[in-house]
Length: 322
Ligand code: GDP
Image 1 (cartoon, rainbow, N blue to C red):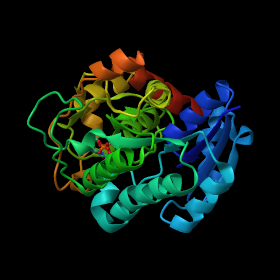
Image 2: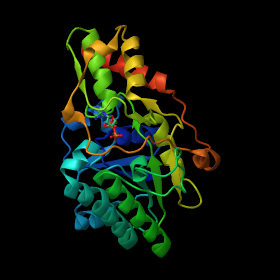
Image 3: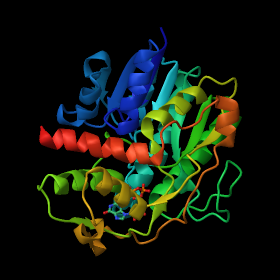
Image 4: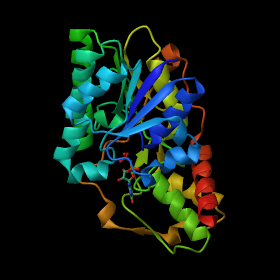
């Protein structure tokens, strides 16, 4: 039985990854910064909380990690632990670098020192590209991050590369474009919208306050993305992959689909512009080319944007109706 260690166990990707690994017969160990029962709602939703060995721990604590890897000797390690909300990364830039970069360095050091056979997946991001000089990005695109989050993920990626080359560690990085699901946190615009739309249609909320609705993203389904992440660790060699749908949609597209699915006409009357939700800088419209993942991992995202949004609206409706 293979053993997997997942950092950031309370998050969206960790939940879907745990489910995938359990289905494949792995022994799954999950670590979260401060795991409480409330923070395990995603694992509860998937009905897998009791099947995972969950503990509290912090990737900014180097000696803790050495002990953990030394004891566990995992075959695979998936690092989803991060300050991952960009709005937050502007407010706590130092913590963002500490967790997202130094934390990764600590994981690499622990692997190098006490568990060299462990294969590591690092959750990199399209935000590493930031404001690139191409409309469509692939693994050869020059990175030009434009927020603390993007900088922290790029620095972690650089460290990964160095450790891979210098010490022969199997560490793979994904440039993940936005991936969403009913398990997405409420702070992200997709979930904020699907939750808001569900509330409005049920008469529980009157308006939806948003920032820049001209923004667009390459949005996919998290459940599809974890399959590629797993496949990355099954290759002969560690490598980097763009994981994206290759389609961008605006927040206006999202609003149109979400409101229509909930049976609410004229969405414009419910959306209120709110300065608080604007970002100091926005990335360019990012759109990923995942041809390499398709060729090497035989991976393609299965869920369309429309299906994703509709699934999220349906889930929020169901939850709110109790
Ligand atoms: P991100 O790509 O990781 O920043 O994902 P988000 O879902 O947080 O934001 C996606 C885009 O939606 C960004 O360009 C935001 O500026 C924009 N946006 C507009 N209004 C909002 C809002 O109310 N909340 C969030 N989170 N984003 C918003």
